[in-house]
Image 1 (tube, rainbow, N blue to C red):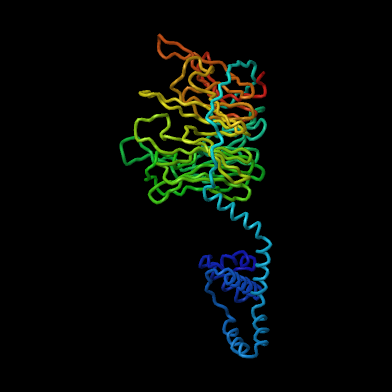
Image 2 (image 1 turned 90 degrees about the vertical axis):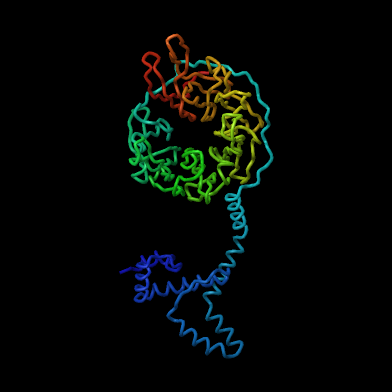
Length: 522
């Protein structure tokens, strides 16, 4: 039998006819024998009716055991004098009038706050007005040099795990089996589990963290298709984003996949499973796609991890025409790239789209600024007043190479500077067929990836110098051709550490190392 505590817990859903049949029957039975809960129910019901009448909401059908008595009293007392009828009417509806008066006073007092909240909500779920460009196309041609730094402190990491970043000083985040997330202490090499997938059937896809939160994407695993003789697997698409509070261990689902099938016209699974997330303090941002009838739309989402309030900052309709894909957050600024006008044939750049532009959202003013117009910039990373991004240069007629550059934007001076291209001094020869991607910014350094070749350099934008972190390796392409190609690869960097794969010059074996950036000499 239901008790008073359970009755109170389910009362809100009961009044809204939102309980299960079993719970509803239990509450009806409890109400028959408990005068206190019955009285509480009648009071809440009266308030609910008053609110509906006050704001012209759709009424809720209900039955009251006192309805017949009230009807008889109304027939008796409403037939008397005007003064008597007014007194009776006030007493008869005193709870309704009192509730309405209290709500009206509260509404008037809260008008400024309510107005602000309504504006914010509209701004979040409808694309804010975009201001004129603030970035000029001036290319800064400051001379960039290379600096070899010796005696940089490094720590060898476990080769059998993958490291995603640093949780705090001397503590990294790693995964070993696709199910569990571990902390790894650089000093004593100890490891301990800190989180695991929310659904035990899922596998980890991506993990990010700061000192307050660990956030990851998990999705269903690929399953081998046994109906055919060819080696094929089902495409995983049922994903969810999970956040865990570092201090309390509380874990919650932030978002889930809305797709029920992959039978949509898109350009691959990257359009369905979120692959890039960014967090600053208690704010998470990510890009996602949503089914929209027979099409797929894209959205940029901001989530307050404390209050669980989720807002749509920007959105597009059909991803075949426009696609919001990469984003980054620092302090009160969120930056993202939007691709538009997909090529039908004869690509003019390395991108599948004709244009890719950068946009920035100010969390304080709730406004969007478009940084580039009909440009070729993507995959932005933001730190303070600096933005790093991929630049897709236009191809020359007949050129088929896949070539990108790394550019940096100063939000104060409104200037763009190309940092890395095929002629940069960090390459031992002209590299005009490299997909330079995934730029990362810290308080003084910039780094990136060189698709399958790897990258061994960071760029100090305070001194305008490339810094080589480890020695290069001689790679033989054939018996007669020997040249130096960097097979070391930086895959993570923050203000304190750079994590990278390092290839031994003697054995060509690869190991993971953590580079202590504060040991780099000037």
